[in-house]
Each structure stands twice: as C-alpha cells, then as structure tokens.
Length: 92
Length: 319
Image 1: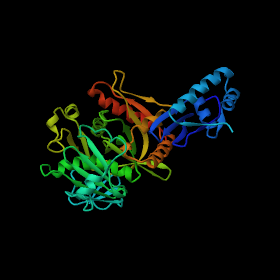
Image 2 (image 1 turned 45 degrees about the vertical axis):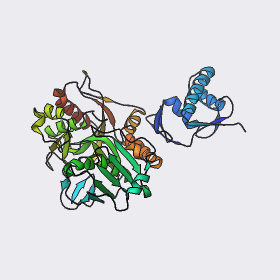
Image 3 (image 1 turned 90 degrees about the horizontal axis):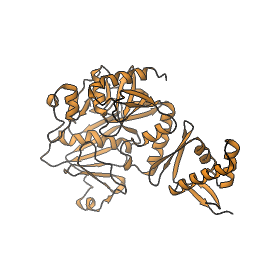
Image 4 (image 1 turned 45 degrees about the horizontal axis):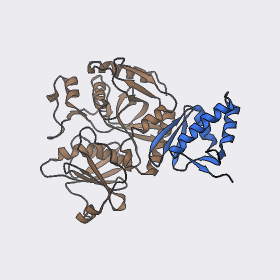
C-alpha cells in the first residue's frame, strides 16, 4: 500500500453518527465502526488520495508525530483493504 | 377483516391471534390458506433457485427453514415440518399450505410471526427483533436477539399497566420526519418458563397450537394491547442478565447503529438495495431517537424493577 492512491470502495455505504463512522459492507453485509480519527481518514478517502496526503492531513489536525500517524494509518488502511472497504489505485 | 402492523389482512378464514374490526385504512394483503399459487407447478418448485445466502437462523424453536426464489422475485419458504408459504415480491399476497395433520392455528403461528415479519421487509418497512410497549403515550422499543426475554418483558409491562404494541417484531413507520411504532397483534408468545415466572404455572396459559411449546397470552384491546400507532420515544437494547441489573446505560458513538443493524428482522432475505435503504433508515433513527442498553437482573423476580427503571428512564427523555 506504499504506492498509489486509496479510495473508499463502491460496495459499501457509511454514515457518521456520534462523531464516529459506521460502514456497511454490501458484499458480505458486515458492519464496521471507525473511531473519530478513523472517521476523519474515511472522510478524506472518499476521493482517491495517497497515504502521504492523508497522513499530512491527520498530522495537521491532531497532535501526533508523523511517524506514529503513518504507522497507525497504514494499519487502518490494511485493515480496511482486508475487508475490501477500500480500493488501491495505481499512481497516475 | 383483520389487522396487524398497519396492514389490513384479507384471509380466507380469520387468523388466530390477530385483531379484528372494521377497515383501518391500511394497505391490503391477501392471505390464501390451504393452497399455494396455481402458477407454482411441481416442476417450478423443483427448479426454484436456492436463496444465495443462508436462511435466517430458526427463531425460538421453529424447525429449520429452506428459502427458494421463484419467478418474478416471489419467495417460497419451506419449514421442515411440511408447512409452506409463498410471498409475492412486493409483499401484497401470501399463500400458506400445510400437512392435513395440522390445523390453521399451527400454521398461523408461523404466518402471524416470521412470515408477516418478512412480508413487512419486502414492503420496505423497517422492522426490528423487538417488543414494543406504551408508556405515557409514547412507545418504547425493547430490542434483542431470540431468548433475550423480549416477550417476557413485554408481559411484565402489561402487568404493570403499560399496554403492549408488539412482542417479537416491532414495525417502524417513518412519517412526518419521525418514527412511529405500528401495533402488531394482541397476543404474546411466551416460553413455558416465562409463563411460570409470571403466572405461577406454565399451564396457566394455553399452547399457541398443538405441537408448539410456546404459550399464548391474549391481551384486551385498549387495556393490555395498544391498538393505535405511537411515536417512538426510545430504543432499549436488551443485554445479558447480570447481578448488577436491573439498570439502564447510555450508548455512544457508532454502537447504537451497529447494534441495531444486527437486530433488523429477516435481514438475510433482503437484497443489497434493501440493505442499503435499511442502513439509511437506521442512521436516521439513531440520530433522532435515544438508544440505550437495558441490563436485566439474573432473577426473573426483578423484572418488575426493570419495567420501573425503563419507564422512569423514558420519562426523563424529552423529544
């Protein structure tokens, strides 16, 4: 997931409630919840973005070291990818 | 003419357990008894495609269910005891057929329960695995999986003077920017141990039908039964019984939505478009209506205290 852009997959619907995001994967009908920072990441990847772009946005908005932000972000994106909730598109 | 969940049911014979009365203006559903549709030939039944996803797990001791998809999107439900139902894709018509050894009361136990629940979903109605009761002119929805104690808690509300709208399927009507709970029918279905806890003896109540373990508790319209829809005040998720109960706890973040999404009725039988609509409706629901956790005490003797705690909690919520 180091290269390319990530974007929310099409086979899902999501909504924000109480500062968190809940996603329904329409392919397997499993629900998935994201905390406040995860919700912000989800909002950002509603259009294709690189990991670095998302990391920089999170670092600018939350008190977090870039290295920590990137590690947590990659873990989250790996998790979302394993559940087929995001797509990775090759860089242009 | 009979009514349930805001629908007017036109059945070949009166269905046991349903409320009768003049037309209430609800959409009409035709119920054909002792026959399946003429177009369903033996060949068509053999050729019917299995439902692509697993059928919902059997409810409360019902025999396993086989679901097939027929031409035009109709559904064929076959229970292992030989009882069969066909529902048209729009949820306007139901056919029921059963072995001659059983009576209408036996088949009606499915029909008035899970089959009507599924029919509501085909009609696009949001329905939860939940009981619903009336407190102070508003409805409380008590949601939980099978065996969570929904019917027993509903019966305890009725004993405390709070009329019941539903004991297992709570149908929600979204109108005018808010949610209302539609009354189901004036009969609670209780396991023998619940009947014993409430009335001292399991056989204080009659069986739903010969061959069914559950007991029927019939409620009087306007007294034990709430026959008109009421605005939804709050949803309580019934958790596991605990020594620390009875108590009510708030839920935050995405928890209400995720929990309720697992408790919608007959969800495995909905297609992706219907699940998408359901998700949007649930999201509107959790934004408008408080959703809280209700923890019953281990002892059934403390059920009345849970009723009081829930009534007091709902009274503290302003709309």
